[in-house]
Length: 328
Image 1: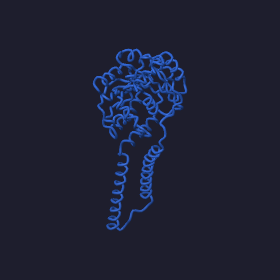
Image 2: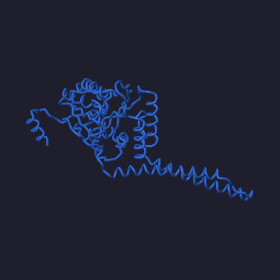
Image 3: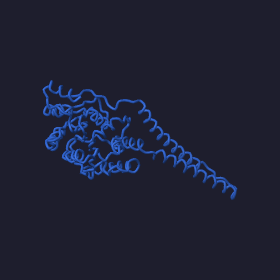
Image 4: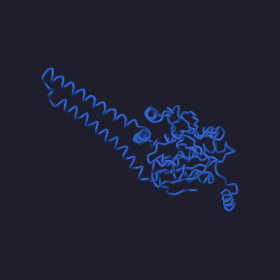
């Protein structure tokens, strides 16, 4: 295999062709204006400072409708041997875009970073040292602080707080999107064909030796985040329903509680009839019982529907993304 690679490299005039030591995967969605700065920071602070390691940068255009692709093509013309661009046919979501980057990464490890400049690229040097020198298969940069609005801080705290309580006790307080995976961990991730994946949960679930590096996430200088409240809520449900039995158990517990309350109420009515010779009359108690039980039943059906929908999505075995073009 190595001989064939060397022969191919010589035929193409690149005798020094080798497998990259690390691949940097960057999902792109409406990031016009920030991509040049991101690539310059990676080149000056990471790629040029690790002389013993060879890297590659993979941008995944996740159906952007702005000028992101044009900027990426200009970046590739400046770094033809470092940059690859994977264009998806439409917007499949950040997790699917990252997975596309995983599938095309050739490095011995892969690093995922956002394209908006909020994550400091210089932390990659520590991540690479932790992997290649200390042997950690997973290195996670955790957000210990945020230079963002109060609303975004609050929703993120609630989101990851629920994740930590219900699904993953090892989930960092501020969550994470900036991480490194060694080749073993990456291969395990690629072998998992979960239909509605919760990416951070899949990483923590692997169980490999993990190192955490804290940092403060920077304020976004250009553009607006497309990570809306609706997307956060959907992702929260993916994480809870995919990795926790708590929703089903709480519904079972609630059903048991209401059954006991109904039995207790029946005893009260019976005692009142025996002692006072009268029954509870009127439509108000009856309507209260009907509304409460009806709401509980609809809630239960909705929860079961969420599980069934995800099961149906899983058995369909749809591709998580479709590649339109690879600029290589």
